[in-house]
Length: 161
Image (spheres, rainbow, N blue to C red):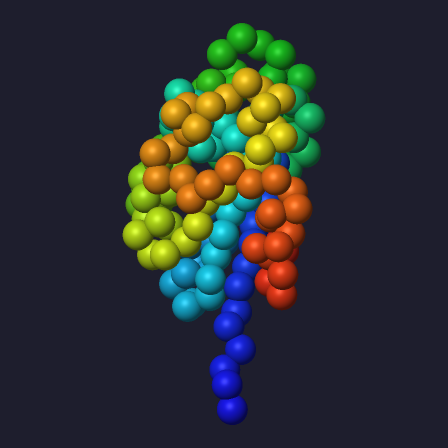
């Protein structure tokens, strides 16, 4: 009996730190389990594979109901309007991730590629944001239309982050 290949296609459409890392962690975890993994970056998610932005992502503080202060208390979102608060929260989040040996986005992409994962950019979003292939992570596997993405995702589990 032929063993069925397992595959996951992850769509990353946001550029905030927690959503990008969710996509990267899911893809990396899939590869570690022997599951084929592909990430399709679209709209603001393209920041995660744009060289100038990939390692400068932030955690939004205004309107983020899940954000917690050290000790687990809810973060008062009103504080987010104070200049520098978002940068401070993002810095704190990155330090906590470093303690857990979670690499920066660029290194995480390298790990996923080394494990056989695939990285794709959305053609329409690239056109909207006037991006060129040279602006992107060097080891990208391609720039796809939505139709091409669906062809690649046939039979796969699709996860939208």
